[in-house]
Image (cartoon, rainbow, N blue to C red; front, side, top):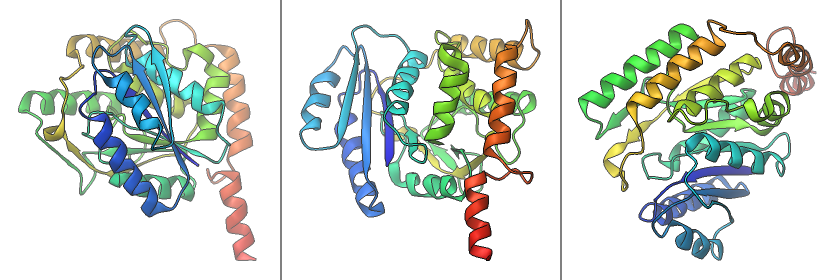
Amino acid sequence: MIYILLPAYNEEDALRPMTEKIERVMKEMGTPYRVVVVNDGSKDRTAEISEALRSRYPIDVITHSYNRGLGETERDGMEYISERAAAGDVIVRMDCDDTHDPQYIPSMVAKIREGYEVVTTSRYAPGGGQVGVDWYRRTISRIANLMMKMFFPISGVWEYSCGYRAYRAALIQDALSIFGNQFLDLKGMGFTSTVEKLVKCKMLGARVAEVPFVLRYDRKLSTSKVVTSITTLGYLMLVAKYCLFVGSVNPEWKRRIAERKHRMYDSAGRLLETAGRESACAE
């Protein structure tokens, strides 16, 4: 099963075409799927359209009465899916504004099946790019990603700030079990939650890969929700908390993370279930 998480705030124009594109891709894949829309206190017709789409597509809707921000919206969606997903299921998180094309879902899922636990789409991988993004946003984004790469290096990964990712459900379930409400701790800091999820997955020892994609900002049908100053402050707080270790890292986290790494990976760093399949094939 593939679960697709769509945080939505005032996306009345994009929600229907996004759902239709997802349906086409999932039919081609031949894989059961379910879309989870988290309506974060939208003021437009997002709630009405979400309910109408439920009669035609496999959609669940979570509704916030008031706008709580991306961090809490993602956390609520992840918790909802984790309670229903099997360990081997895949969770795909996408933006709901039509800038993330569902055509990249098959390549991300293929990487998950290879044994990666997180696969992020990347504008910076060969074959990736962005359309409709002005020079200022391009520059700020590139600087932010280079800064995150410096403080939280992940081999082969250059895209930290894009929320379009696939996760193995077991990883998110373990993350929520270990970190609890602090899985997304900086919830009020703009789009910081996008990077924080990757940092927490890295702390858990997850294997991470990236696939190229083209960000289609020219298709964006709603106004941008990014507040650059708040998100920048959030990034700095993230570095201070989890890289420079201002304060202490929860010792219980360390113990359970060590247990998870031992349980999930072999000495070569492969997921044990993947390593088992490869051994069986070799025999």
